[in-house]
Image (cartoon, rainbow, N blue to C red; front, side):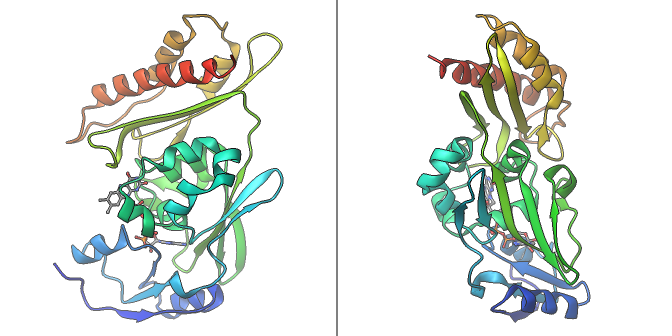
Length: 286
Ligand code: FAD
């Protein structure tokens, strides 16, 4: 199918893009990589009166080391994150996850701002935002504000942005970690995840001092599992820990079933991935 008729504007600044959105009276849509929006237009599931193309705005694509965090411009492409040496050394879980995002052609165009805004519950970057406790900075007619992922992702394919707001930057704090892992299963490599987990651990004098756990594909938004983190830190570390952790993860998610997998299957899958991920993270100590 072809999209319904729309006007197209290509502003050269964020301010001009916001002006165009304001002028559209809620009928405008931002275009970034187009990898999710264009199919929606073609199926006429979205019918914006105006497309506001961000691709002509300079200075929205960057990966910057700010000491204790990495700042990423909203127009940064998935392939830039995938191949960045800075991301690999400072945000290794992100580096590992990016290979699972769709296919090469899509990674060449798709952007981090687009992926977060699209808010697919089985997409890697929203889950990474939850995992790293990213700060999502958006700009609108009233200026800038920074939003935490737990507020930003409201529901499946739904974010908390006002119609005239644009994601401009995402900051990812650098985590101190002694071990980490990212595990995902999709029906075919590059498809959206059926289930996925990211883990980071920090060792203490006895056992673990801190843990971070986020999952996706098992709820309407990506989930940070804080209770599982606390239970993991309280655990004795021995050969049985990954099995016990797997049970904890299974007890803390209630996935919905769909045509790709039943609720029971997704829960079982996630529990197996949790076991594998923790084993990998713990093995990094040696
Ligand atoms: P666009 O398609 O341009 O926009 C998406 C939405 O976000 C639109 O509503 C748009 O208005 C809004 N938007 C875009 N940028 C901004 C901004 N800066 N501020 C506010 N709103 C904005 N993704 C995965 O994560 N994992 C996968 O496995 C995966 N598989 C895919 C497989 C296929 C076949 C396809 C077509 C896509 C897949 N994707 C996957 C999605 C892909 O990663 C998209 O690139 C991404 O979801 C959207 O990014 P985009 O830059 O293309 O955004």
